[in-house]
Image (cartoon, rainbow, N blue to C red):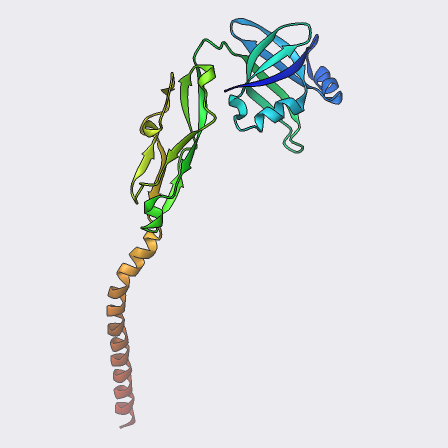
Length: 227
C-alpha cells in the first residue's frame, strides 16, 4: 500500500564496518537502495523514519518515497533490516525500488473476525494456524490486511486460504488448502479417561473381594496352627 511518506537519504561515498560505525555515531543508519533494473546505491537514512514505517499498520508492505539528497526520488519498500538484539537499534536496512506498473509478491496478514459457533455453542477452541498469506498484485492494490469471518465454524471445520476474499489484480500464491483457522475440541484425553472410568469402577470390587478372600484364607490357616 502506497503512503504519502518521504524518507530522506544521503548518498554514501564509502562502505565498510568503520564507515557504518561512524554513521551510527552520527545518528544515521547505513542502507542500500536497489532494484527496478537500476544500479544499487549505498545511502544513509534516519533510523526513526524507517522504524516508524515498520511499526505502522502496513509494516514492511508500505510503499513510500526515498529521496536521495541531490539525486533520485523513487518509490521503495523495506525488504530486509537488522536490529541490535539488545537495544533494538536499527543497524542496517535494504530498500527495493518499486515499479508501480509491475505486479509483485507480498505476504499479507489475515485477521479472523467473529466468535465461532464451535466455540460458543460446542465449547471448542479456535486455533489460528496461519497468520498471513502470500499474494501477487499491483503495488497500489496491496491491502493492509485481510479480514475473514469465522462465525460459522463448528468443531472439526476449518477456514482455508482459498476462501480468503481477493479483489482487483490479486492472485493467491499460497496453497488454497492452507488452513487459516479451525475449531478443535477441548479435553479429548480427559473425555477418553472419563469414558473408561465405569469399566475401572466395575473392576474395583473384584480386587477388594479378592483381597478379602486372601485375608479369610490367612485367618483359617492361623486357626489351624493353633489347634
